[in-house]
Length: 290
Image (cartoon, rainbow, N blue to C red; front, side, top):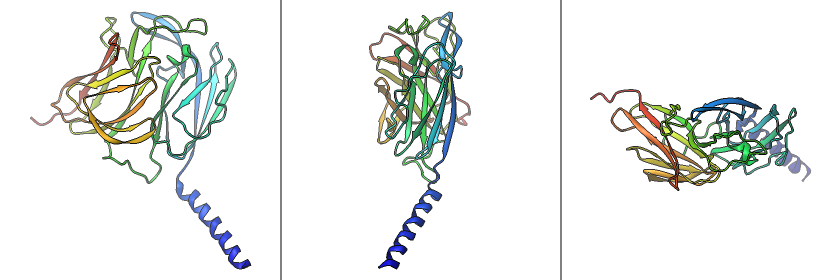
């Protein structure tokens, strides 16, 4: 009995180390710097809190089962806490409030999350500009349960306020909507438009995030059908639509087949209330041959 027990223990240890060896899970590190930056949009310039000086903020891109360390340095004027939307496993410091001049490292252990998640500031005034994508790719050796895309692109639907937002200036209704920080041509201020370049007959995985706080958004690409393959950090049964409705905070993964005549097609994002809308451009970069 003793030798059998020892053999069982040895087999269990070997199995454990084989799992570690072949899982392919990694430790991944990111540095976030909360800092103010100037932006000129809607015919005016203002200061906004950002991560690493960009709006939206940087994308976290990892694989299933990875452990992610995000060191957040607060170089702004106000205390900020970060929320990791869609993470179902353990996160340290969930309610950590990072004071100005201090830093904190979030440790995020991924489990079965897959696809598109996102992160944001907890407070209403800061999350308008402090947010970004959190992309979880299949683990090493795994494949998508749908046709492999040519490439993938993240599209964040956001909002813009003319006023400078602080703890004392909580946002009301936005003055514009944005696609990846671009307000488009609908507001009459020569703001830049988001452009998505595709090759004819390419297949693209688009990762949509509705970062608008209090508005359901409707997303569409003119003359193109969209195939839903994932929602809120999980794969989904494939379905087809000409437009998508995203609740606040919702993420959707879609396949886009670039099969129309070569040209330019409007990308539209509008509020379900119809109050505001914004546009981008889908641009084909190669010819069909006719």
